[in-house]
Amino acid sequence: MNANTIERADGRVEVSRDAISHDPLLFNDDLAPTPIAERTWTTYNYAALWVSMAHCIPTYMLASGLIGTGMNWWQALLTILVGNTIVLIPILANSHPGTKYGIPFPVFARASYGVFGANVPAIMRALVACGWFGIQAWIGGEALQAFLRAIFPAWPEALGTVRFDGHLPTEWVSFALFWALNILIVFRGMNLLRIVENWAAPYVLVMTAALVIWAIREAHGVGAIVRDTGKFHDAASFWKVFVPSVTAMIGFWATLSLNMPDFTRFGKSQREQAVGQLVALPTTMTIFAAMGVVITSASAEIYGKAIWDPVELVGRFESRPIVAIAMFTVMIATLSVNIAANVVSPANDFANVAPQKISFRLGGLMTGLIGFVMMPWKLLADPNQYIFRWLLGYSGGLGSIAGVLICDYWFIRRTKIDVVDLYRRQGRYRYGKSGVNLAAIVATAMGCLLAWVGLVVDDLRILFDYAWFVGGFSSAAIYALFMTRRS
Image (cartoon, rainbow, N blue to C red; front, side, top):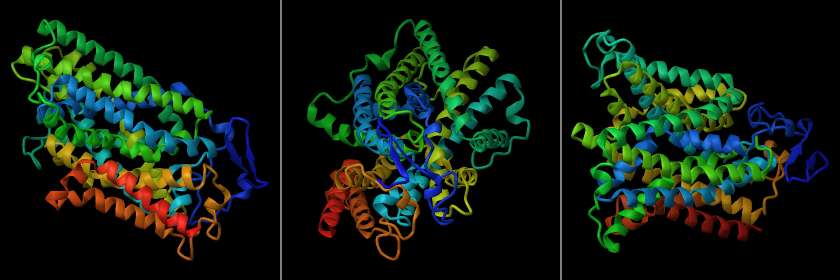
């Protein structure tokens, strides 16, 4: 610590703004450390954040892909619980520096990757978020389409029946409107985000519980899916599917396991953020997925086939007001998770690349545009591709970054960071003339290589099945070896 740094009794550190260089290549107001006076998020705020992020359509439908592989309902839920419990470890490990120093993820990454090398993990994280933003925006657009159809029955064909890439013109309009709503909230800032998360969390939970009650009453029970024993009746056959499935579940929140400093920088204390996350994440993910299983199982009894997509399910209701209320709930759920999970981080990440040109708002807009270009409607068309390619694949890349970050912060630096030098080109995090720590870059690249080699070498497929673990542990070990030799 230096004279411009004050460490409080609760472990949080505050740095004088006057001591921080306003280098246009490393600083703007959005990337600056959060003052203590603005670190006001409580346990409830973090619990509500996770509840609202977990209460989304992909979570609701998560068990469907697992059941589709042959799991029964409790095996699918166990897989979801295990994956989300494991991912808490890197989430909490990377949350700590945010609360302690008040810095966002890309600035935190400068300590290990270098002041300019941090752009590598930031962009890797941002591109994944863009894909997720597109997926959630498309789902929200589908809900808005159903909402408008419930209010105006003629809406679907109001702009004609000629389809573009398989979708009606009004579907594209609904997608565009929902997309714009996300960007509008981003432009209003983090305080509005906190307000949305606080009231969206309980609202969506209550409405989903009401749907569970309705489904059980209409089906006179829980239905055939819950009674199905699945096709895995021995440990060996189950394990072959369980391992890559757990890795995919970790991949579901692998993005947040990196950029939680973007949120914990506003925390009142380490206890507030840690307890809120511990209580909310694994329980909410499992319970909400269980609700999806029960509702879908009952739908098979009611409609003659299992309907995993809640938008399609609610669209079958005869009461237009009920459909409208249900679709509004879906939109709120999707909106809250999309902004928190898929816009905040990439907005900061893009800003970190060129702070003098890219603000948080412009970064959010870039996220939305790239998310559209990635064509999320095609990615969602195949659930198997979604879980075992998309989730599993990128978990290896993000795990490789997490390994470097955690190793550097907890084992190399012992949680000690010079915040002032994070904003200086000539400081201790310069790592040579380029501002890039080659040890971190090489370790990350090697972690990715080991995690992904199974995609092209069949005999090494097991490495891809364990992609997040392989990427994380190998990159951490390689980084530790390089940094130990350097010192």
